[in-house]
Image (cartoon, rainbow, N blue to C red; front, side, top):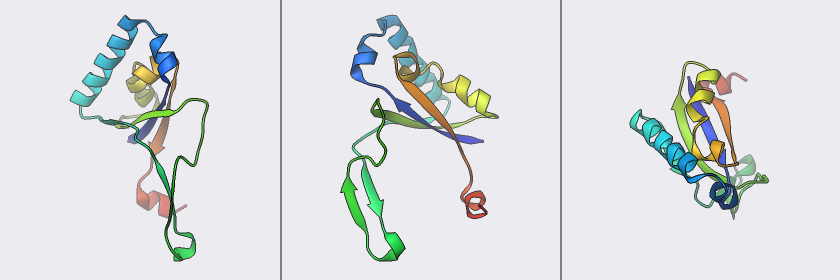
Length: 114
């Protein structure tokens, strides 16, 4: 199964986390990347709309807001949700006063059947 993870965190929480914990979290990310996890830092988003196929509208900025900014994303492969959680529990956002969401990624065909 594939899972999309979204890490939220801010500089203040990161800076208040012990350096050794941060170093291990970055080493954890490096191990995930070495194992093939696609991971990246979030850049500035845009919102795209094309209601009714009547023309594309693009607006700068996020559609969703949260108490913490989005810091990054990853796509992980795991046998279960529990395994995916174990994979991300040591990442910088999880240990440095942020949070990581784990979303099961369904195939496009499964989404079409909804």
